[in-house]
Amino acid sequence: MKNIDGYLIETHPDLFEKLKSLIAHLDEVISCESEVKKLKEHPIKDWHQYLFSDIYFDKINMAQLMMNDKEITELFDDFKNSKNIKLKKLVSITKSLSDEIVECYVESEFKLSYQKKYTSTSKNIDRNEMRNIRFLKNF
Image 1 (cartoon, rainbow, N blue to C red):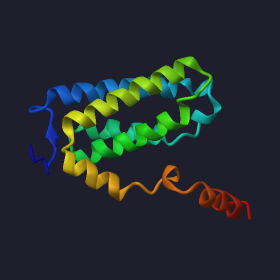
Image 2: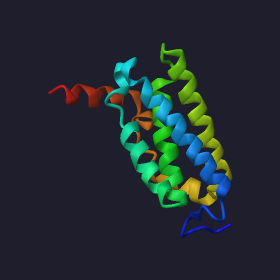
Image 3: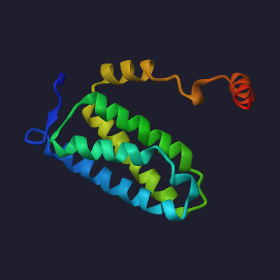
Image 4: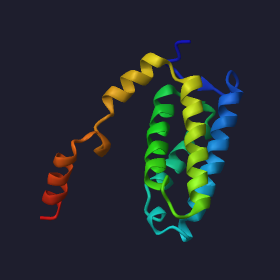
């Protein structure tokens, strides 16, 4: 299933239904910003707008699906231990939906290539190195 150009709504309506559901869940997550201070400035709000505008044109590709998964994973990591039960549940649902989309619509080779290219997040940095980065950041 090589898909360089992208998925079209006409050929993959199920994907677009899942993406619309994902957008709806992100709407709910963002609606919690009045209750959760950390969410007010969270980058997921910008990603939400970007994804919404992309699916508006009824075409999306595997790179966008992987970028979405990266953003949703960061959202999940930031709020999976939230004291706000509603937010915690919403980010879990959103993460599960994103995982399902990647599993069904992103080829394994592409997924591995993308993950290798974009693994330089703070989660992958040695703990001592992270302390040094934080220390230097304070100067």
